[in-house]
Image (cartoon, rainbow, N blue to C red; front, side, top):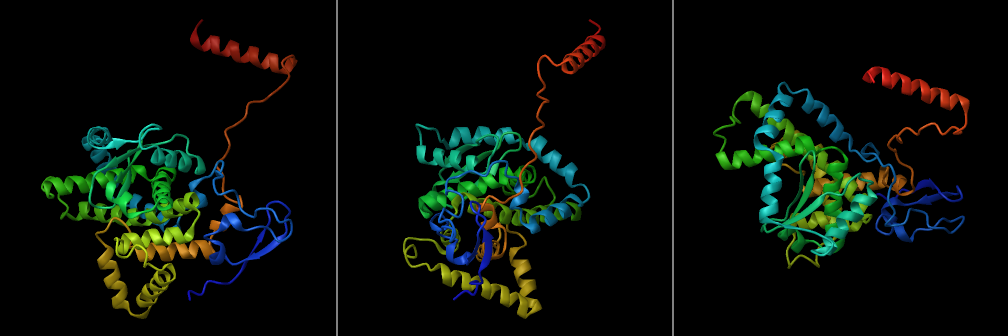
Length: 357
């Protein structure tokens, strides 16, 4: 049994009563938990949005530190500007418009509704478009900086159930919400160019380029941990999250009904112990992950377990989270106020003077 049963104390958002809750016991049934004092639902409604949510409320610390490190790499901004300018995100949108299927309220409606729901939950300013492309590999990604969009592969839809698909869409929306798109789009284009040209035009073996490439990959893996947290905020079901990671690790028709979340979490803790036991294990783990774009599924499950049991996940579901600064509100003075009229006349005179009218 995974030993994360220590209770934590949470105040009720309705009556303020202190409730002792075991995070792992309730992480997959938050909609059923009620306050011991007033008997009202303890957490926000499962479909409730998080108004003015900022990504710093759920940002993984490794994401922030890796991004700071990436920005210190000499020449990184010059290279990324070149990649985005020459390879163009507009070209990618054109590709998916021609080769994939774009969802719409009357076309793949369940998927379209999931994007609407996830965007509302995370309080995105705009709802990205979603494309479904035929590909035998389960994958999902968000592309674009100015006008980002999401792509799901058909294999991804075959592997996951509806709740897990909603979580994956929430994950990609998390990347957009957290402002990951500049570096992620540049990495996507860089990887695409490397596949097409086998490195002939971009010399990956040169030290400077290799440093930028590896720094991008490392940051990208860390950014996935932040997006995983956004996934949980949209999905709100820890068991479903872990099952999603198991599907990525060993999903097929045979294993579909045989996978056990508790055993997978025990495996995640075993992986952590193995790294701590011997320095060579840490070296092997680093080498094995060095050229990957995503963390291995067992590590993602382990990081999520820690956030759910020890981090701010349940606090956010209680409505306690960092919010964006609200836009400044205009001074609402009485229309017949002499001060307000004088101010308006002064501003008007100044404007007319500047325009020469």
